[in-house]
Length: 120
Image (cartoon, rainbow, N blue to C red; front, side, top):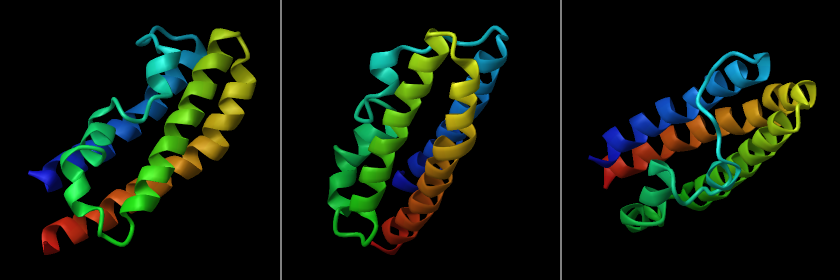
């Protein structure tokens, strides 16, 4: 089950970018809530990492994934704030820079954690 949840988490985190793209271009999309976008503990991955996933905290990259995941959500909250303020170009710069970097890092870390979970 954890492996399926982790695969789903990869898809979920990829969808953030698409939703931000729609919001930045002004196309109708889901509205973002600043407080929930920035809270890494309430998305399915965060809930799992800080709940049932704690049993895998001895995996070599567990702590790094938790840290990167928190930074990802902090950056997402910043983008939401900029979009809300009408600063779409600034939001795009962060989306294409820091957000993309963190998104790729999360995918790599989830894939590594999946290997550790499968081995246990």
